[in-house]
Amino acid sequence: MALTLSPAATIKFSCLDETGSNSSIILHIASATTAAAAKTAADTLAGLLAAVTDCKVLGYSISYGVEDTAITSPGAGSRVERKGRIIFEKANGGSSRLEIPSIKPALVLSDGALDGTDADLIAFLNGITGGTLYTGSDGSDLVSVGAAYEAFRGTTREQLPSRRLVM
Image (cartoon, rainbow, N blue to C red):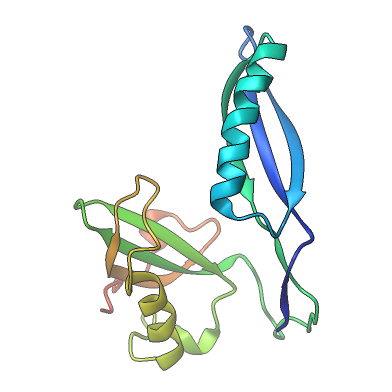
């Protein structure tokens, strides 16, 4: 894997008109621009944009793209519909869900739970919960894994494995 930063990052402004229709404006900045500098520039431009549109400027997002320049073939039999679902417990008592597409079959135990003793899975999960960088969508820290199991795109609650806790 040779992950390389794309030459340009993206700032996407979201706008809303009086009918409720959404639109967006996409601009690019040099990928060497720091996130703090990009945010400052976007804050300034959002005000300037509001002065030239009758739309309500709802906000913006900044994305730094990274691409693999040494792409290899996917694993034989891999299917994105087969997911490893991880339920994280958050510091505020809530939960947050992450789904890993095409989870490796060797990580799924016979009862549908993910193998909590697998070194690669442990390293991945510790990479998420081992600091304060990754959070739930509400900004609350992800502190532990509450459940980890196999699920498919169309899995209903009744079809989920009976044993889901692994950590």
